Structures are given as C-alpha cells and as structure tokens.
Image 1: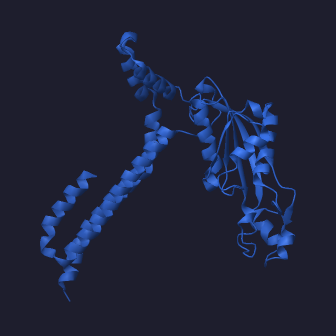
Image 2 (image 1 turned 180 degrees about the vertical axis):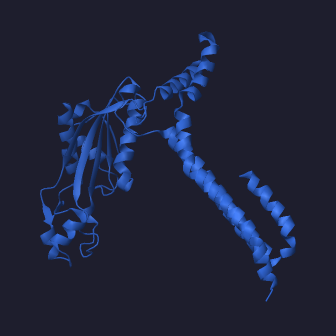
Image 3 (image 1 turned 135 degrees about the horizontal axis):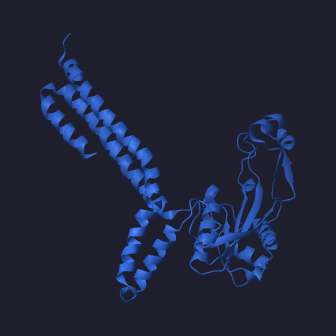
Amino acid sequence: MNHPLRRGAARATPLLAIALASAAAVAVVAWQGPSSLRATIRAPAQRSAPAAGLARLGPARRGPSCRAVEQVIETHTKQVKGKSWLKCVPIGSGSAAPDDRITNVDLEKQVNTSDAWISQRTGISARHVLTGDKKLSTLGARAAEAALENAGLKGEDVDLVIVATSSPDDLFGDATSVAHNIGAKDAVAFDLTAACSGFMFAMITAGQYLDTGFAKRAVVVGADALSRWVDWDDRNSCILFGDGAGAVVLEAVSDSQASGMLGYDPLTLTLTLTLTLALALALALALALALALALALALAPDLTLTLTLTLTLTLSLF
C-alpha cells in the first residue's frame, strides 16, 4: 500500500541522512576542538601579540594593572609544555600505614572468596587497617613527619597544612590535629574533601597559596580510614579498601620555570571545558532538529520544500 506515512518517510530519508551527517561533523569538531584550542593557547605568536601591544605603551603609561597583565602574558609565553606556572616544587615525601593487617586468607573466613581470586583480579594480598581507638590524624601526622624528614625540615618551618580525606576523625576536620602533632604551630590548617581526587586538588590548592606568596612551605597529606565504612559482608567491595596516609612537602620558588608541578593548566582547562560543552549542545540541537524534521515530513509530506529550506538554513548556522 502506498500509505501517506510511507511516502512521507521515503521523502524524509535523504534529508535525515543529511542532518545526521551534519551532526556527525559537529561531533568531530567537538572531539578535535580541545586539542586545537590547546595548540592555539600555547602558540607563541598568538600570545606575544598582547605583550607587544603593552610594550608599545611605554613605561610612563603602564599602570599596576598593565604590569600585572604583562607578567601573566610573559609567564604563559614562557610556559613549558607539561608544566604549570605555579611557582612551587615538591621537596620531600613520606607515607604511613597501620600496623594491623587483614590478609586475603582472613577474608576467606568472612565472605565467599579466595586468596587466588582476589590476587588475580586486584593484585592485593593484604590491606592495612586502623583498629581500636587509633586515629587517622595520628597516621596522617606520621606521614607528614616522614615527608618533613625527607625534605630536611621541621614542623615549625611549615606555613600551611592541608589534609585531603573523606573519613576524618573529627567532624570539623583533622588538619589542625596534624599541624599540632608535627609542631607546625604557626601554620594555617584545613581539610579538603574530594574523594579519590582529593590529594590532587589539595596539591593544586597548596600550590596556589605558594604561588601567591601567602606561604613559603606547605605540607599536603592524603589520608583515609575507609575500613570504617566498608561493608565487610560485601565480597565485591571489602577486598579493595584499607587505611593509609601519604604526604608531600611543597616549597615556593621565585621562577615559574623551576616549577615542579606537572600537568596543571587552568586556562586551557577552563576554555576546553567551555568549548566542549558548547559543541556538545550544538550536536544535541542538530540531532533534535533531524528527528523533528523526519517526524514532520512523515506526518505532513506536502511541507517538504518548506522544511528542506528550514533545515538547510539551520544547519548552515553550525
């Protein structure tokens, strides 16, 4: 039967193919956009133009804000690929783990699992756990002390302490306890909670404090006592988690070229996310338009010419 819906669908098929092809092109641009953007941001010719413009103003016409902008541009121009421009460097690291352990053999008695099954799939043979009234803040302090010893410093040399944790002893955080335990009596101390990425965020936060001159040395601690939250009757999760702490000492440097912080580029990150979201929205709109057009042509085939022109004009905007 030559049903009107079939005739409309047949007429809509070529236009739907065009719309989907256009949507695919938008997707390719969205995929390639971030790398192209990063290349543009890092291109010396692109960045040197503002600096040249500021230079033409001459010293007499440059106010404090112009000089600040010039310094930022100069820093970006000299940036080394893979390095941030935060003026700090790690100078010591340390770690600490509880003495008590739960082995895979111990877990065999608790849940339906085996040492061989766990080892083959996770590489874990045992996990350290805090028991009794032992505190996470004490464990974090041990890691911080090891990092300070590795850096050849004392607690009184530290200006900032950040503890990244999702399982503090104290509802209000453990950083102040860690600072007290290591003897950082004049340090600013606070907790930062960001789950698995907590230590990374704490490192960047400390780096920004050092970069601005607020502090000269910082101790960043990542510590968790996840054994307190694990369901030990769940064979899928109890095999994975244990307790421990790691720490690093960061020190400010005067030259951004001496930075030891790798892979942090906030300008590129912000612009990349913005561009990606914008192109993803464009892709969604293109797909929605294609589906709406196919439906309209199926229901009203006499509007083929009008809708074709509408589609052509709309896709030209992308």
